[in-house]
Length: 361
Image 1: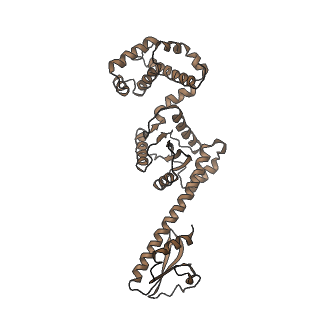
Image 2: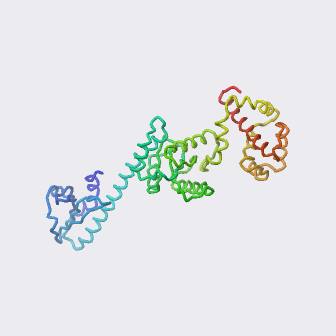
């Protein structure tokens, strides 16, 4: 912290008032800075106070900054001196907090780079940084990848850091458009309340100014060695699931899709070649994929699925019957066929993406 610069800015409070002279003394009584340059380097006896010369100890966050010296012949000088001393303490408190913030921001950036870069992964250094930042290494964490297509200003991260102070979480801007945040989750939060808790937290972030953003919420991890897996699950969401601005997307809602995407290879696509060829009887496979996904997410409830797709219930039933005929499945009654139908839709979705990317079917 540049104490001289801070005090010289503070001097402007009394610079134009000839009735007051102020200075900052070190613990030996030497004048380090003063509104009267001729007083710099003079020494005061710290045990002698007078009506015209008063000394006020300046201690902030257990740090001793010496004494504020206030010289005035006016009545009420003591009251003004107390106000000046408190004002200087407030300024130093702010500067110390900002200095700590900048230091922690740098450390958090180092920590996140270590966590997400497998080539730089150093578990001992990760633990050391977490302990230096006073982050609980045992409490579970979940990553939240926040992306603003327009990019984040530098002050966005600073403002976020101020808000997140003492919450046990850490964050860093990983590129112009992305902030990665690891949120500590209390073990007291029950699994069935987890999404609500995280949605409320994201709502807070939006209230703090992080709007017009995409929020990807990864998999909860309790082991620091596996925090990077939470980040990777955010990336999987980003690359595989369509979403809307300011509406959080949870990896927990797409675990089945994730495992299917990891399982499907060219060989598996060939094994399902019969269903792929059968799908050619359909005029709109994209619609079939959407219906299969919504049926799966709504536990195959016809009414809820129809509402989600903005279809009449009878129209949805008609389409499902068509799919049953095409694929030889009993989608409405057989649990096994429900799963097979969803797998077919997932395979066709992967196949469609590969074709769009220029791959061979």
